[in-house]
Image 1 (cartoon, helix red, strand yellow):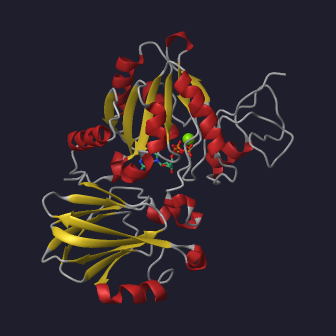
Image 2 (cartoon, protein in one colour):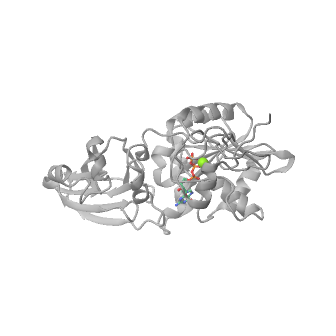
Amino acid sequence: MILRKCKGCGAILQDEDENKAGFIPNLTKESKYCKRCFRLMHYNELPKIVAKNSDYKHVIDNVVQKNGLIVFVVDIFQFKSSFSQNMIEKLRNKDVLLVANKYDVFPKSVKVENVVEWLSKECQKYSFKVNAISVVSSKLGLYIDDLMNLIDMLRRERDVYFVGCANVGKSSLINALIKRNTSLTEDVISTSIIPGTTLNEIRIPFFDNNKAFIDTPGLINENDIYQTILKENYNKIMPRNEIKPKTFQITEGNSIFMAGLGSLSFSNCTKLSVIIYSSNDLYIHRCKTSNVDNLYQTQIGKLLTPPSLDEVLNLKYNTYQYKLDGEKKKAIWFSGFGFVEIIGKCDCLVKTIDKEVYLTNAIIG
Ligand SMILES: Nc1nc2c(ncn2[C@@H]2O[C@H](COP(=O)(O)OP(=O)(O)OP(=O)(O)O)[C@@H](O)[C@H]2O)c(=O)[nH]1
Ligand SMILES: [Mg+2]
């Protein structure tokens, strides 16, 4: 028996168990997509079966053994959680093209060259050598031709593997490259807002000599807020179009809530500029620091939502303390729901849902 793979998710097609990956009611030689991918593509029904880290690990261990060009995709809005230490270690000393996707969510005033320079410094910080860096939007097709040129330059007649954390847009990027370079107008691979959409390796012959684009399941990052909050809130925290930054002039004793997902409290400062980059739908609330504890106790899930009221009891919050010397503009990155740039000297107490927070030099500059 020849095993056939679903073209949308890579699972092996089968007609025996509806609750398992790759199910299709009547499997024939012509079958292309499993029921899950068919319903996702035609009815936008979100997948219930998702990849596990065992799927990712099995595939990535195989990819790094191969002599291919590796396109390491990160999400520019979730840079810190998608530039995963775990992936960096796997990809060290390989032929890597780093691609920052979802550039469309950044304000139009942000120059690609500056983002590339910032990314290159982040790579240096981790002594992570890459062959090239590219910034794109697979959604709007921005800089897709430049990326194709880079791939052509670096591929040297080899296969091209797309790897990265779940949800960064690996499958969307392959779809964008194929649509731009063929007569196809529809997506070939399934994509969705749910992390773990791609279930197994998907090989799409694209170059001469049967060389291919190869999609892979993403690493499900435990530090990703999408592993914690309810699915109904995903659309409120993931920006879908250009972010309109919100600027605040902050003085001693002021705080800012990013809905109920986190807050920043400022002290030991005279005057600061604080710029919030988050989904335009995320409610930002400024208040006095003396009110913060009371708001956490009484308004999470109500005024300060997401999270939703019925998930509040399961959530834990962590605090982090930063001392900013004011010499350089800094960025504090939350896991998956935004980042905040701060100009000025201050102490900043960050409280957020049980996920890591990162401090870097400002990316927007
Ligand atoms: N704004 C924006 N959203 C994007 C872009 N590319 C992908 N997305 C969205 O990001 C989500 C994840 O995209 P996928 O292509 O499924 O991501 P993936 O990396 O293949 O995810 P897994 O298969 O789960 O590992 C979807 O909701 C996409 O619509 C982009 O360039 N801009
Ligand atoms: Mg995918």
